[in-house]
Length: 173
Image (cartoon, rainbow, N blue to C red; front, side):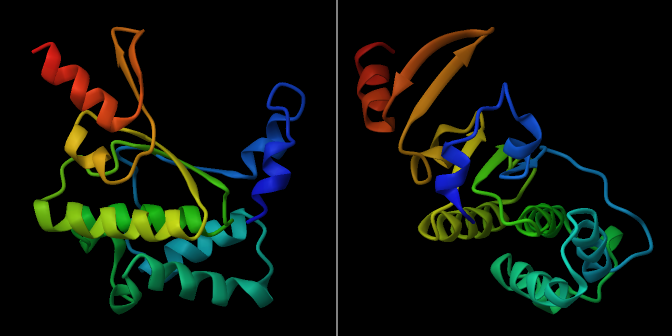
């Protein structure tokens, strides 16, 4: 993705251009019954206007990145919660956004699925993807985030580093 182009965009002046560089994954998203993982991604690749020539490669790479290649012909509605979350992440990869907005990405996942998702997200960070993650599980964020903002009832209670937050919470139980 071209992150530098993203930084020069003004969301107030050109919101559609900004949206082209942003991928959003809600904490729960509906999946379509009766289609395979590949067909699901094909649908979104077409929606993002990815050319037929490029589509197959984009889907293959997204399945590999999210460790779903072995499930590409499985029906989406038969996937586990963790696999569906990874498929939602694969959907974001269809248009190669510079910024990922992830709302409670590990909600409802078992510990193994959480670790797998975290590892995938760390890999995406290493590839230069920026992420904004909402979560109420601080330990989940500790390995992913360079900056943390705590919001309580609509008011910012803390902004800074995770280590600074941990020091602050030790001082004020």
